[in-house]
Image (cartoon, rainbow over all chains, first blue to last red; front, side, top):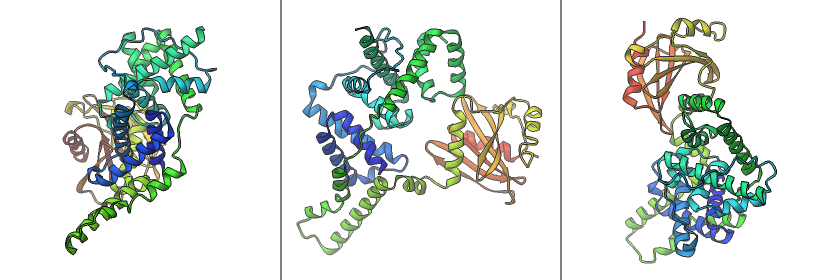
Length: 155
Length: 254
């Protein structure tokens, strides 16, 4: 059941804990069962992940409104120069925590691209944004991770 | 290309998401710009760290069980006693939906196969996508058919008909060897505006002509037809009418 793992992974990264992630995936599957007619062929993984994502955002807005940092997709220059750290001796726990601190839209872009291996087109389908936005979100998300790691190296 | 452009595009480059033309532009820029080259190195290292960190969470067995047993749940909702016919149709619809969803969740590979057309289309689309990754497009880069055609000699057990359609705005970009349908095939690459088209050619004993077959697969269009003893499969992301135009040109040869 590879889609279920992908669904759970996305929900887990968005919700931040396993209990809520399970609820979100379960809810998403109920919804998928109820509105199964909404599937019109194409990529079934993107379709399921899009439902999971919607459920997760609804859940976050309701239960963790303080974590929902609004991002502006037009604004490209928030990290001036994040540096180009080598990441060769970065502690995995540190990187995991840094990823967990990114705004949800950035976090999901990294999770879907670097961890789940989705194409930009598939991520665009899941997040319901243009492919160009996927690219800029990934760029900013990675910039922030580079920034975390660069700053850690300085201290 | 400026550093500002490269700053964004280098991500898509590292992800293998750029088309050939843009990839070449980025590569060109990276050669002369140590700062952007360092950025690419850092991005690759970040990707490696994210993959090796093993950050993917796996669905726990308890969740898996819940999902598996989810299908029969909605039956409790129908407490009113509708007429037998209504009841029959409701169950039929529910059953069909459940089967569809379970198929999607449990058997993604088989589902996408049966839903998206035959294996050949998916195979040529895969070849097409792979060819667009940096450095894979052509083995022989030339718009001259007298360069491309002899290049295939000795590499294939047939001589594909190579034509340039620059005047019809489908210039020949080059050729490549590929492997489709369990055999080595010729892949000709044409360009139309910014779109690239892969034309896969191999000999066939099937009769010339016949209706050309058009399929859509993952957003790509595939046209397959037989002409003059060869099978042609065209793949591109461009508009299907334009793809048909090229198919017409290729089919009209001789």
